[in-house]
Image 1 (cartoon, rainbow, N blue to C red):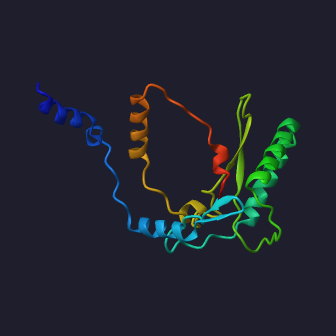
Image 2: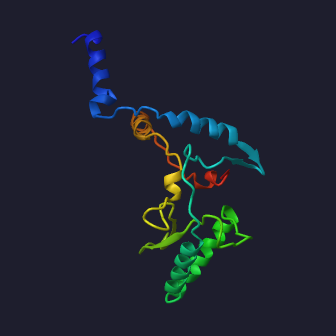
Image 3: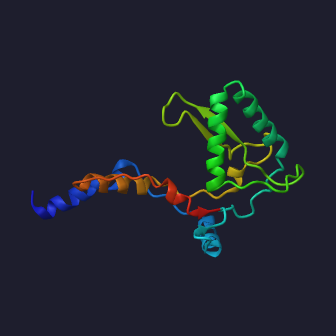
Length: 187
């Protein structure tokens, strides 16, 4: 086989369509979401700030103070039976308060949408307790959640495939923990 014949064959082998991966078509809201991002992007207090990417004409989020408060009370009551986990929960919340959480100063049960959370307990030395914020929680089955109101990004499958290919091409591969870098982004 000549080099001229080999080139299209190799391209076909590595073609994403051969693997069943085809890029998604951008939705009409993608341009609006990108413009919203550019209009809200600022650098303040040594951080980059952006607004949450709301859907165009998204429904109104319900007031959920009662539900979030009850869920928190339930978590604390359950943790009081396990003092070591209650202490760990408190430490994690303190770290998150220092980094990105805000204290609600005007705790009015008749306004606002709160972000409830739940705990995941694991038999792990590094992360025995993890706090998971529940953006999909709804006050009623017919109401909306925060996830329902936020624009989602296009699929990352294409980009992930590119990353994996580039990782295999080189001689060395590096991984890093960039979690602290994301604390430089405020919402």
